[in-house]
Image 1 (spheres, rainbow, N blue to C red):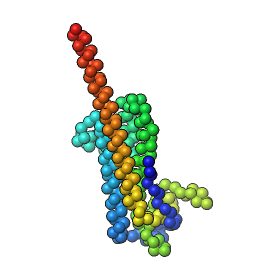
Image 2: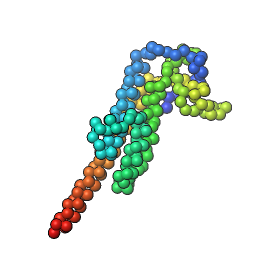
Image 3: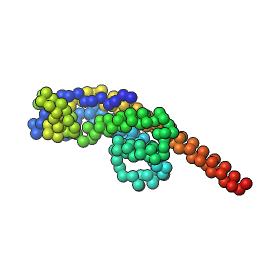
Length: 204
């Protein structure tokens, strides 16, 4: 499964020396909107999967479950799968789930860069996204971006590429949901047949 491409490094800059840009070019706003809208679809897919495995009405689920990022919510999905024994019922699922979990995290991180980062104007007047989360490696060692933010240039094609990766991931989550729901329904139907047969034997 294709992963969201990492933003190319532009420069290491201290935020105090860089001007924050408040008015961005229209194509940047459009690009951010593409990523945020796609991520909302992904998070809806994770939420639908969660509510199906919890076997609750969606309106009830929206009341009971507080908002979480898709990556955090997917952890609950994994626990419910264990509860239902679905990993044993569907042997191919664990590898799919493991890959999906990392992919969802990557998509969330890609979205968060734009939701929580600010745009700056570098000394050469190029527009860049300031990133303050995580670490990066230099010749001097590992540096914390909290101390030394990085300025990331964002190619025009990055937005659509990332949108497509997020939507592809959302589709994979929905395929997993359908497979797991079908397994739950089959198990429920089998349990009903067994219970009915047991009742008939008792009556006889």
